[in-house]
Image (cartoon, rainbow over all chains, first blue to last red; front, top):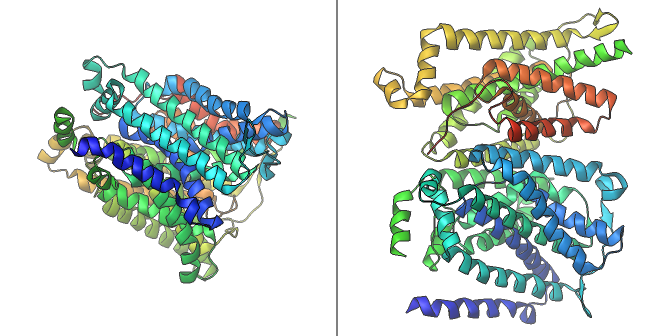
Length: 338
Length: 291
């Protein structure tokens, strides 16, 4: 019964969510929700890569940044219309991921983590040292508002609808994807790569596709971010941001579809709370202290509950799964049953 | 011109020795525990900052050195017991996320204690620089070279020529067999982190008179140490030293001859090139894979 009703439950939840701007008039809350939505788009991709393909990337801030800089450079230096610029913001990170992913994904998971870490640092250096093209450390301003036909996304409320409708569409699409043959194959890879390979799954190809897919989504989030903020500098695209994205994916619970959204919401909310709570406890403390707490939360979660808050997702009926290495036997039973 | 090239070579060797020390600590931990500790750079930064504070409080340099090394060694042991040991059944992926989380927390802690100021330590010994064919080598550089040589010699002797060293290496190859002959892999893991804490702190204190010491210097140092270890092949002690020196020299020449902004990029480009083309490292090879 629940299986059929679940669809309507989620549809109602999504519609209810989209009614928020009708009731809430606070710009602060709407803009926080936009940021959550943008991060959630990115973390959905990272969640597929980590939770289903079993690979970790510490360089997703670079893909996010490549998307944002593609929009900024194309619209300000070359006066591109906004939609083609957004298209480029999606495609560029995807192409870069395809190029660097092909050789690295043949390696062990450890080396992918390291290669993406290095890649993230390199791209960040390129943003900072890019001279006139990237605006150097001070960045680029004067990015126009996104416009589709006659519709100009020049207010927080309009942007809220754009981001969250895109996110809900993405979630619906991914719900189908993880239930498909591809989704099951991905889960098999995260259980045991050798077993998956022996079962005839093209592990390298699928891991590469997940990597490219996650980069495309990061680019989309980055491009939208640039159109929303209309100014960019290298700082939001540093290694710290990459770690935050991994944290969001892990906190929400890997291998669930609601996890990334939940994780993005929790980490952004936590950041906002820490921003005013930390100076109360430690006088004169700046916003950078929240990073200590982020680091600690990441460690504690990974040590005690590597599945993140996935249990919550399971309650709501989405298949929950832990990181490879724990609870593999129960998952096998689950996938056989489902 | 040749003077300048020689000068850059010496600067590169000093820099490279620092990377080599961090790489040695990384490789030792990785060999003994299978954990790639990305918080290694933070041990370096915290060790240096602690020694500077202790020295500033009035203790002699040698006491500051010993106390700081001891404290960071204990910190390494504490982190192993609380985080690594508790999660020892987890995958390499989980463990690497844990060490990154630890690195971030430690950096935050250093920021809390020492703030964003830059600190420095006086050189260990007085006297002017040594001139070799017109290029200067500072006495502190000689101290750093000495530390690398001693560390490498001690590690090599321990692992190749002592009963315990060989036994500890064996415990990594086969945990069950090691237990049967009386070696506890959990103790080995704890000792590996204590040693890498001590080694990291020593490296930080030796370089404190040369570089500016800040709370956030650990991150890039850790990454460089790790690039050096990857060049050498993660399992190879001699390779780590060669990798460190090679990286230091390349960085020094690129900073001196191209631009100082290119320095960090060079290290990462080497990392990616090695990972993509010879993941076993330029020197050694690592064969272990987990199912």
